Image 1 (cartoon, rainbow, N blue to C red):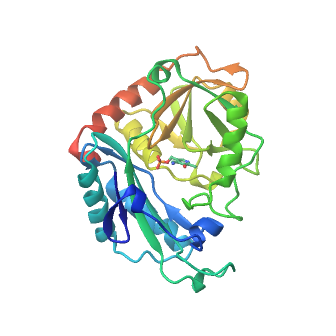
Image 2: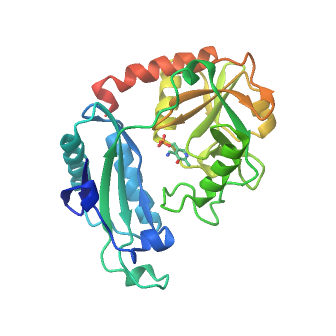
Amino acid sequence: MKIWLNGKLVDRGAAMIGVYDHGILYGDGVFEGIRAYGRRIFQCKAHIERFFESARQIRLTIPYTPQEVEAALRETIAANDYQYSYIRPVVTRGEGNLGLNPFACSQPNVFIINDHIQLYPKETYEGGIALIIARTLRTSATMLSPSVKSLNYLNNIMAKIECIDAGVSEAIMLNDQGNVAECTGDNIFIVKDGTVITPPASAGILVGITRAVVLRLARQLEIPAVEKNFKPEAVYDADECFLTGTAAEIIPVTKVDRTTIATGKAGPITKKLTQAFHQYTQSPASE
Ligand code: PMP
């Protein structure tokens, strides 16, 4: 496996950064999670834009242009040549001292990992997955904006521990208003009376690239789609529920806490969107 590290492709065992890097000491840095279908990078431009926007929001300057980052992503996937894969560009604040001051760090470290993608088991795309509602709330935008895909994922990890303890694979995280925000690594949608509903960016979410594609596809299919706040009760009472994310694509949800969602199977709108999504991933337009 080849890792791209500060401009060079190196073997995984040789890809090292120092323990004084503030990415390690303080989670000070940002990253992206991107999927490649063969050599085609799904929504490449949107991911690079989010990468630079995350960095801008924490006042971290990526020492490359977006074009150079794109070239580096392509160089990395060409070196590994997997059929389907996951690409993880990361930029850390770089090596500093033991104080917090980010501006005392010398030079950001940039690396790109390209690996096999971890997927939900095949049968879950028909039968759906179960969720819990986590007690851990999603960080509010007044603390650290969830729109920054930062290296500090402990908020999500604490909710992930709750769902592992409960024996399910994802957890719904609420915001401090009691509204549904998102899951630990996926965005959430419900369907009610034929309308697809997902929380708005202002609910405090990572604005998912898959979420944006699904909203676009819904509108193309003339399925009403809105961004609107809702409470956990609306999930229990939904006709359908599904999650979206780079790895999951679209995954049906059939149980939340002790409540079975509608029929307990993937619903018709979820299936229609999934089919449209798969078609889209196979087209050159999806890059
Ligand atoms: N929310 C969170 C917290 C995430 O970490 C992710 C993806 N890793 C998503 C939502 C989904 O975003 P995307 O569709 O861009 O993968």
